Length: 381
View 1 (cartoon, rainbow, N blue to C red):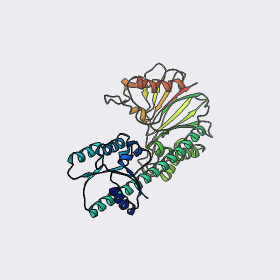
View 2: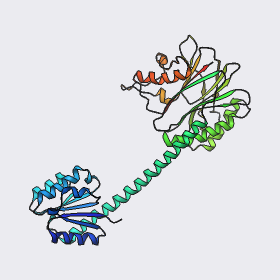
View 3: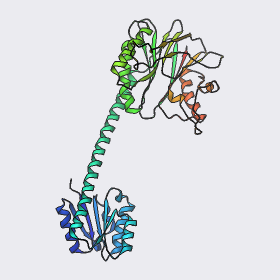
View 4: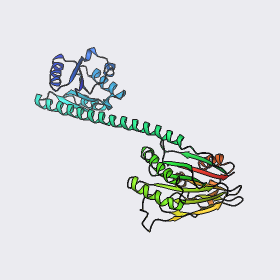
């Protein structure tokens, strides 16, 4: 890297000496006499170092420094002022105007050479770090774009199908362009529908990378003919082997039997679903289960405790990820889903409208969603 240097100087002999020193230090040097330069010349091209030696034209030299500072050039360019030893006021004004350093002259040549070399070395190092940082940012941006596109394509591929006897409404909000919450449905060989509602640990790229892998594992196993309680053990084993350590997804896996209007719920780490029976206040669904993919299935700590009911006309289930239950007001109050707050999650009207209304209702009551959030409302038709 060859640093670009601008010398602003009123003394040709001094300018020649500076040019010689900087050229030997592998710098590309441009030199202007103060009397020939307007301050705006400083801004016409990018310099790594500007050396200002105003000599007799002190005010013009200060204007050059001020112009560079006012236009933000001094944030990326090192400005070095040269000032006569006896002129303390000019030294102060140079610093106040935006110079990064001021050298008192006359100065021993070897000392000045060492000073210049230190500044140039610092410029080279900072430039390399900036370039490397920019390359990394560019690569990350490209990766995020690729994953965002893949996530959108996956989302379209996993678009919820028409499920007989059941309407599902969804409200979602991602902290980043892409989020880790998901919902998917698969028709099973036993005539039931498997509905998966989940929240992958993390946000953005981290969550988006895991989402396709987890959905693929779920789909592969849920299309088997075995009982869902047995399939969950296989899903747990597959997740435990294939998903990176310390990564997980909280999930609620449901099985809907259209003809019987019957639903089974296996909750594994998500907030408790809410069951709103027609004409009655909401109640939490008492289903408990271990996080899937964390504990090997042969361990006794792994639990599967389903809950089931028949959904009749006017009934509804509301599922949320922790982005909803951890929504917070400005006073620090968190939506804790106590009985006094059940009305905030009340599903009014059609499922599609009800899910959206829940998200809007939380905002109207001052709750700010700070995490990826997903609401699903299930109603029998």
